[in-house]
Structures are given as C-alpha cells and as structure tokens.
Image 1 (cartoon, rainbow, N blue to C red):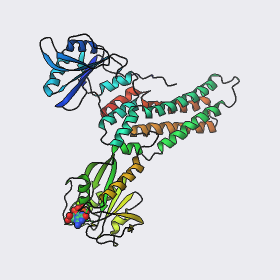
Image 2 (image 1 turned 60 degrees about the vertical axis):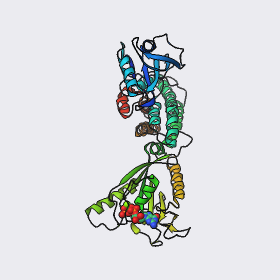
Image 3 (image 1 turned 90 degrees about the vertical axis):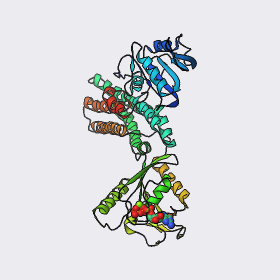
Length: 455
Ligand SMILES: Nc1nc2c(ncn2[C@@H]2O[C@H](COP(=O)(O)OP(=O)(O)OP(=O)(O)O)[C@@H](O)[C@H]2O)c(=O)[nH]1
Ligand SMILES: [Mg+2]
C-alpha cells in the first residue's frame, strides 16, 4: 500500500493570513494555523476555546477595545485543513476591520504572516492531500466555468492522485517480486517470477497509455478552448466576435481589412471556457501590415482547437478559396449575413454542412452556440475517468512510461534482474513525483510559484 512518506519543509511557527478575497466585502475570513492558534483564539475572544468545529459568536479584540463581532471556529489538529491546530475568524469584510485583526494577530508572540501557499504546503506535509489534489484546489479557486469547476473539484478530492497511487502500488508489487529474485539469486526460485512481475507492469502500462491518449482534454478544459474565427475581409468576423462576447470588443466597419491583429475575448460558452480570437481577413495583402495580419491569422487557425470559418451568404455558392482551404473536421462553417440572402438549408462548403447566421440580427446564433458546445464537449468534455490537467502530469507520466518501456526490453532480452528492477524503480519514482510522494521538496517552489491558497 502507499505510505505517505512526504516530508515538506515548511517554515516553523504559527501562521496567519486573510483566506478570503478582495476587500471590502460582506465577510472576511482570517485563518491561523500552528501550535499557537489556540492561544490566538483565546486572546482575541478573551474566553476559553469554543467547542471544536462549531461556529461561535464572539466579541473580538483586546482587553482595551473590541475590534469586531464575528464568528470563530476552532479546528484542533490533526482534524483540520493543515493537520495543525487551526482557528478561523469570520469577521466583517471592511478593510479597517481586517487590518486591525491582522495587526492584533501579528502582535501575539509566535505568530507571523503566512508566506504564499504556506497553508497548503502544511496540508501537504501532514499528508492531508497529495500534490495533484493541492493543484486541484488551486484550479477550483481559479475555475471560471461549470465544467472547469467539476474537473477541479474531482481532482481536489484526490481522484487523479488515487489513480497514480494505485499504479505506483502495482509497480511496487512487481518490484518486490523482482527484488525477491535478486535476494535469492543462486537459490531455487519459483519459476516465472519475472514473467509474473512483467504481467503486473503490463496492465499498469496499458492503463497509462489509455490515460495519456486523451487528446489533452483535461489540459484544454483547464486552460480554455482556443477558438479562431477565420474568413475573407468584410464577411463579418468581428461582428460575430462582438455578438458572442456581447460587447464591442473589436472594431466593425464596412471597409475591408479593418481587423489587422488578433483580438481575443474570454467567454463561458455552455460551461466551457473559450478563448475566442478574431483575426485579420484572408485575401490579397496590400502591404506588410496586411501580410503580417494574415500570417498571424493562419498561425492562430493552425494552433486552434476549433476553427470558425466565416463565408458570405450573399456571394454563396461562390466561396473564398483561402478560407475554404483551412476547413477540416475541426471547423464550424458559417454563412453570415443570412439576413441579406438566405442560403439553402443543405448548403455545404468543402464537404461540410454550413450554419446560416446573421451577426447583425442574431439569427442562427443559437445554432452556432449549440454547435460550439457540442464540439467543446467532444474536445474537452468530462468523461468518467479523471483526466490529467497539467503539462507537469503529462511529463511525469511520459517519463514513467518510458522507463516501463525499457523495463519490457530488459525482460525480453533477459537482462540482469538488477538492471531490470532499476527501470521499475525509475518508473515508480516518476509517478511518485506527480503526487508529491517523492522529491516533493524540489517541486514545491515550481508548484507554489503557480498558485497560493490561504494567503
Ligand atoms: N447585413 C449584415 N451586415 C453584416 C453582418 N455581419 C457584418 N455585417 C457588416 O459587414 C461589414 C463588415 O463587418 P466586420 O465585422 O467588420 O467584418 P470582418 O470580417 O471583421 O472584416 P475585416 O476585419 O475587414 O476582415 C460591417 O459593415 C458590418 O456591419 C450581417 O450578418 N448582416
Ligand atoms: Mg474584422
């Protein structure tokens, strides 16, 4: 079984920080964690510790003056977020109230302000969560859309970490069998020991391959789907962006070549995070600026998860060749300006069905939104098994899988048991780095550079 052997170096002492968001607000939450948390709670309430995990109303402050009236909650360790004694103060969210409370806490012996991410570091140190769960928690705080929230909540609950732990346990079992072979070499060994170990490893490798062949869906959902609007000048690309964004993000005019650079807007479309890009019209470049605009447009189209190719309904069935060339199965094909000319329902371009819209009247936009959401569900929708969500996870898994590949070669070529076992150890270690079961010290600064919770 997995043992939690993490040792996370954290600063000593009792830390405190504002755990809630920007002030002023209705409420603010200050969290204190460490051996002096109980002392801080008693000092600020002027009474005994309240019953654990019960919100209790108290006047907060010093003997001389009350700073605020609020709720306090006492979480004695180890049953707390950090595993240490934790006190929470739910106060009014005024700037002066929070500042006075923080100053009062700073004046208590043994207390100091928390460093970025320090509460989470302590939770990791106490084995309250693995590294993927801590990342999930950061993603949950950052989640802007419904699908992101669900993915982050699953990861924060440890779903992803449990899969990697299970694989690591599988490799540990196989390694134990090989190590037995090393220990008893020269003596009579049960036949087929290496083969039995290899069979175990094989099932882990198969699961890993399936997990890695996910078309980056978890990362796409976390980072946002990149959607590019492409088309000839004046077909209504910027009008469409503005309509979807519900604001005038891009300049619209009847002069061809209005948009020269890429204009991006962040949207929540059907629960999916979308980074929608308007681009310069494709056509004949009149000068260097137009040429560069077109180059950027094509580059964006090539890097997009989904393209929206816009054609003019008025000139249909004549279509712009440069736009038609980039149409593939990852493209939604639009005939815009259908308020001026209604194309037939079965109009196709480059073999793809078209969606008739009018960026001017909003006609057909519901169909477009539905089509985008359907594509997004295919590209990054949640599936039953949790998806990896960061390049860090992918790199660790690839490293682990590569070591397993070398392990299989060693088995096939009947290399020494010692060399064979070493590959398993490397694979196991790479998995352990993802969950922070090993080498977590090296990873923390990288990870905590990324986010901070509770500070
Ligand atoms: N009637 C009608 N006019 C539209 C529609 N969409 C856009 N237009 C008009 O078409 C002109 C060009 O619109 P834009 O949105 O600037 O077109 P664009 O594709 O971004 O053009 P460039 O940036 O120059 O490549 C403007 O006058 C718009 O008002 C539509 O659905 N119906
Ligand atoms: Mg434009």
